[in-house]
Structure formats: C-alpha cells, structure tokens
Length: 189
Image (tube, rainbow, N blue to C red):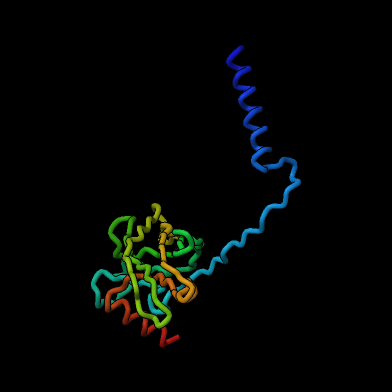
C-alpha cells in the first residue's frame, strides 16, 4: 500500500514537472510547423525486350513441343521513402508475372532469372542484381499468376542528384537467343 502511494506521488510530481518545463496540456500551445521533405521517387519500368521470356529445352529451338516456360511481366508496383537522414531513397519493388508451363518442363516448378538494375539519367547502369523467380504450377494446371518477392534498393540522393534522375529497371535475365527472339517479336508487332 505504501509503495503504491509513493509511485502515485512520483507520477504526480513528474506530471507537475512537465508544467514547469513549459509543456502544456489541453492543446493550448501552438506546435511549430515542421517542413517535411518531399519524397521524390525514381522511375520504374521494364525494357520492352526483357518483359517476356520464352524458354525452350534447347536454346536454338522454336518448336512448341520443346517449350519449357513462357512468362511475361504484367505489373510493377512499389513504394519509396527517404532514409539515412534524407541522403537516400529506399525503393521497394515487386513484379507481377503470368506464366505458362510448356510440354518440355521437367516437374511442376520452373525457375526463371530476372534482374533489377538502377540506371542514371544518361542510361548508364550503376548497379544490377540477378534474382531467381520460382514459378510453381499446381497439378493439372498449365498457367499461373504470381507476385515476385519484394526487392529493396537504397539509392543515394542529393540536391543536385534527386531520385527522379534515376530509373529502376526490372526484366527477365535472358540468354542471347531469348533476347534475339524478343527483339524479332517486338519488330513484328
């Protein structure tokens, strides 16, 4: 009982001390206006020749019976926020994918590599990482939709180099044959 009175008295003294330090209760004081920095985000996109992958069992084949997987990026979503005392922007990117399992696929799981790259205003690639997307097809299902893992990037920014001067590219990591096939399909459209 005595300990609870001591704690209650200490709590009242602490609250009374707030009044002497200039804190007020009841909303009578005006809070200072705090200017929050405006978050500028880099552009995010998929290069037109890397948004699709058509993978065959043998690289030079075009026979549909040799098809392992066909997939395309259907969406990119993300967020960005200032970090490191406003000296960097953290970008979180996730891609949506539709895929079709081909007759030459071994098993119900297919791995497709994809990349995330950061480019400068003059399109120079500053950083690039390659990841694997695991596509799982349930039994008796040849098509799947899924979201890839969230990729987190930290991009340094400054007044003379804002986040809007960067572009984040997400696309499939293709072989030379797959890239040539995609480029011929883009021209044909």
